[in-house]
Length: 254
Image 1: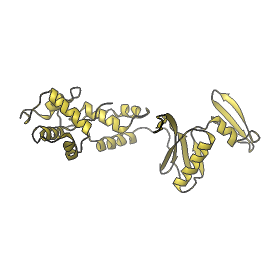
Image 2: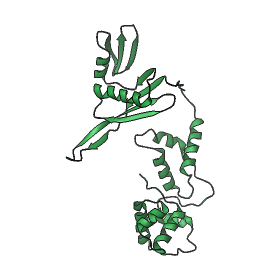
Image 3: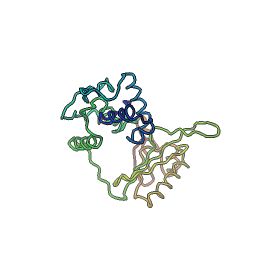
Image 4: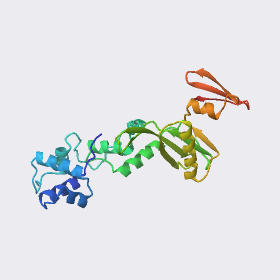
């Protein structure tokens, strides 16, 4: 992950507070709202470059950026560098990738021609609206609640023994409002699965007309839909037809 870039104006202020005013790193951090770690890295870089105060008068922002961010584009320009929105769109599909992370990598590459984070997000939303839509779903308030377990697990450390256990993350989202509830449980078993629903509805303060799961383990399906009422028929790989007593047949991944 690219390190978050510090604006050139703030770099000048950090150097002044350290080299001229003689403030400690924590004092500088409190004064400039910059993390201690970022300040330490910047000052270490300044020491290796043998930078002194005052800075040379001919040291513009472009040259200063090239010194502290040698792998970036230090070109000064009144025009901003437009991100590759198609690449941004694809990268956001990967687990753990966020707009904040992609923006930090973008600013590190173009330190003097980058949009602010709010402008970056606004222009990305505008680009998204211009793309061709293949399907538009309309959700009514209180109609559907979408549930699923997210892919990554959460490590839980026992403070007494140091034992590490992984917890599953249950997520529920109301379709119309995107109102979200999430919690961690030890498993995806039936008891945890049902209790997660109970706590979800308590949090929402009501029950939707229907709950739409993305994936339900087969053992839970067998318990919720007993064989006396339904039978299962494998049709293709993991696809299964569930035929119920009312005559309806539903296909899905069980």
